Image 1 (spheres, rainbow, N blue to C red):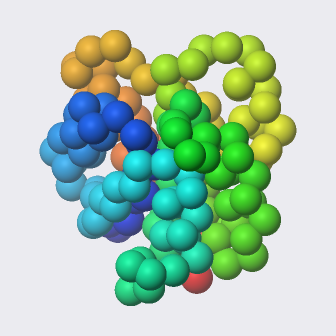
Image 2 (tube, rainbow, N blue to C red; image 1 turned 180 degrees about the vertical axis):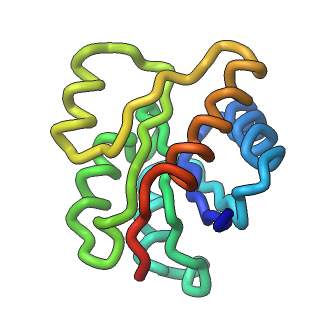
Length: 142
C-alpha cells in the first residue's frame, strides 16, 4: 500500500483534530498538512513561503465554509493552477445544500462529502477514503 500526502483545509480546530485522528489511525497516510482557509491553501500549493519545501499533496480535503477564502473560491483557483490542477479535491463539509453540492462539482471537485456527526462515522469515512483513493483508483504522479 502506497502512503499518501494529504492537505486538509479546515478552519475548525476541533474538526481538524478529529479528521487527523481518524486518518492517522490508518496506515495509508504519509503526511497530513493542515491549513485553516483557502487563501493559505493556495499559498501552500504555490509553494510560497513558508511552504516552499512542502510536498504537493496527493489529495486535498477541503471545507467550504471558512473565513478569508471559502472552499468554493479556493477550488476555482486550485483548478486554474497548472502545477496542481490534477490533484483531486474532496469537499468535506457540513453543508448538504443542493446549491453547494452542484457548485462544487461545477468547479471540478472530485467528490462531495458531508461531514459525519460522530467519531465512529468519521472513522468509517477515513477508511472509505483510504480504500478508494489508495486501493481502487490510480492517482496522477508528478
